[in-house]
Amino acid sequence: MERTANTRRNIVYGFLQVLTSLVLPFIVRTIIIYRFGVDYLGLNSLFTSIISVLSLMELGFGSAVVYSMYKPVAEGDNELVCAYLAYFKIIYRFIGLSIMGVGLLLVPFLSRLIRDPSLPEGLNLYSTYLIFLANSVISYLLFGYVTVIPTAFQRQDVLSRIQTVMTVAKCIIQSAVLLCSKNFYLYFFAMPLVTVIQNLLTAYIVRERYPEIECRGEINEEQKTDLKEKVKGLLINRLTNASRNSIDSMCISAFIGLAMTGMYNNYLFIMTGILSCTVVIMTSMTPSVGNSIVTESKEKNYNDLRQFDFMYMGIVTWATVCMLCLYQPFIITWIGNGMVLRIAVGMSLYFFVLNSGSINWVYLSAAGLWYETRWCMIGELVGNIVLNVILCKVMGIYGIVLATIVTVSATNLFFYPRVVFTKYFKNGKLKEFWLDHAAYTFAMILTAGLSWILCAIALPIGMLRSKLIGSCLICLIGRLIIATLMFVAVLWVVWHKSERYRIAMVWMKKLVRI
Image (cartoon, rainbow, N blue to C red):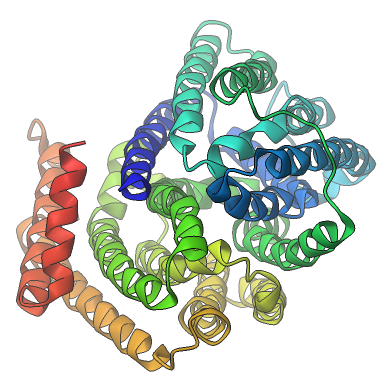
């Protein structure tokens, strides 16, 4: 089936792209820590967070346009697809110029976002920020709109391949600059340079692959109104996502310090890296699910959701347990005891609850139900910001993590499912979904607890201080093996007789053979 083949292909190349985006920036980050210090990472994280907030001006138009293209793509209506693309091109130009304008207005206030009295030596705050801003603006103004075409045609693997090549190029340039010249301005200049090349390359490849799709025609007022309504819901969602990480980093910088921001972002870097692997699954599925919603029955889509959710939460459980067992040993091995924070349990739990609503979000997005989530999104946004400020002052960095866990749990485990089941499926099976997730949570806690105990006994963190050659590697690999074996054992004991387990094994074998 073409949808299944597209999904598998998107996942495979998506994982390749994510692996590249994890390993190579990790090497660059390590060079910065050892040669320059954690303050440089803190500044990099702060500007990245500011640009992420500015990028909210995209408003979710890209996702809304892709959703609107699902039906005309399925029906072969290229004229309507072209009309949507022409409209999106105009919107993206406006967004790029808006980000540039608002970004320039923020320049006088940059110094207030840094608590530390001094900046990393040799860096000008404003010049560095303008490079970050230019990189963001270029990504919109220079053919940024063409990325919706492969996505709407269920071929995100096209974009993944381009991004993989350009990530390799960027990290090679940045590493060479850091090792040879130690010039941080050249390091930052690599970002807009690579963005220009990537956008030009993407535009060329998309034009060659889809010559029949070009900017022409115009959508009607009803279609514009429908887009605007969906964008309202997406904007709120993007504001919420920004509050999770970007505002977290800005709160830590403002209330605790730039160095702590860098230390926290080491943990966040690892978590978001692993999260990006699970996000690949979501983004690879969404176009195919969108096509299925247009062409298949709700009953089939519900059965698919349960199967996808089972498989996805299995991956999430394994990743959560591995994070719990490997977080601190990895940090110690990577950058030393001085960079350790006692937030491994919190970050692992954050990862689990953040992923608990992912499959629901895939169906919610594919069905275009963003606007229906507006109130729960607003609740999470406000709750997260308020709890961030209050708990950060009371508990420090631990309060930031706790605030996010509380608000994300409420949204992902309760509100998202309610929207999907009451607005799309309407089959009265919401309680069945909640029971499924209660079982997944129980399995995660059981697996994590057993793995933690076995790792503490067999491979204690203290062995990292051993002079034995390879002791760090033995500890990390040993803990990974323990976590994996415990996950496989619990999964088999609890679900090996279920139909979902059997189907998952068949699907995984097909994925391996791709």
